[in-house]
Amino acid sequence: MPPSKPRLIPLPEELFGEDPIPALLKSPLPHGEPWGWLLAHSLFKARHLARRLLRSSPAGLVRIVEEDLQRLREVRLWLREQYALSDLGCREATASEWAALEVIEHGNASSLTALYRQHGLAPFSCNTAFTWNGELEPVTHPDPVDFDELVGYEPQVKALLRNVERFLSGKPALPTLLYGARGTGKSTAVKALRTRFADRGLRLVEVLPEGLSSLPRLLEELHGLPQRFLLYVDDLAYDAADPGWRKLKGILDGAVWATPSNTLLIATSNRKNIIREGWSDRPDPTTEPGAWDSLQEKLALADRFGLHITFPPFDQKLYLKAVAHHLGREKLDGGTRAAALRFAMNGHGFSGRTAKQFADISS
Image (cartoon, rainbow, N blue to C red):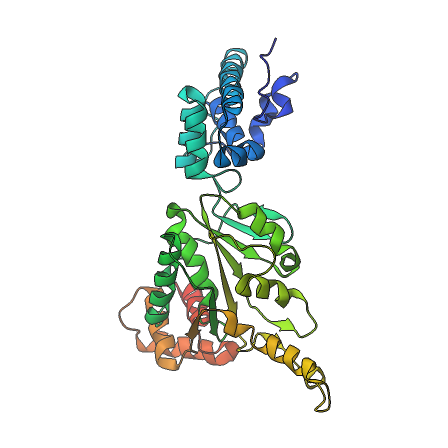
């Protein structure tokens, strides 16, 4: 007969059914005895318990938590005896998983609270990139791009890193707008921040257009977590009638809902004013002043970003320098130089993206 289930720590129902083994296939477990890793993951999925412990640990809750941890140990022992399995893993364990397994094996309520303070809860404990479209979706294989992909933008990268370093250190940081032509590396720079700082608790959440209306709910979900979150809006531009810009204005200017100190907005745009506006959007000169005030409010959205970093377009010299960098060469020979220029002139244009594309097909 299986042991009693924990009361506050959710476990897969399959563990207490006729065959618990299929439960092991629902997540990519690390190398090693699988039952311990599966139960370690359950600690991070106890979302309500984690948020409660992060606020306070009253004596009654401590007692229940320690009983639950003992029940987890009994469940693990029973599973190992009934279904002895060797390594089913497909990867190395993360630091958060090792810490959770230590709590399973030897921990108490205090060490479980410390686990949540250091590593947070699922899915932020084991994932570093997400999308938000009204629901949070982990990105299993995030782009591993780093800053060495960028050529010719050293001052821009330095300014970006300085601001994010302040954010990670708990100091005031500025919401950031990366502005420039397509292909200049704005999105690469944002994704490289995750690559560079994930080990320091930075998480990247790409807010998709359909997720803007539910931004307050995302902020509530991130509030109080130990990680720091970059809220990333790519290719930011709105029609004047689109209400999405008002949600961003709420983050930048303040709203009824508070913006957590562990979140920072960063956006990229190809447009200086961000709000797309046609002549039909402009009020008639005889219109009352309130209409003109509304127009200026829309046009000034970009001004609400405290830090503007401009990525100027490539010229031929910088393009060829980027090609050489991506090919791992100091200089280009005549044939490669000519081929790279033909590639750019054939509708691709001079940009960092074009240089990387040429290098990819030439290597």
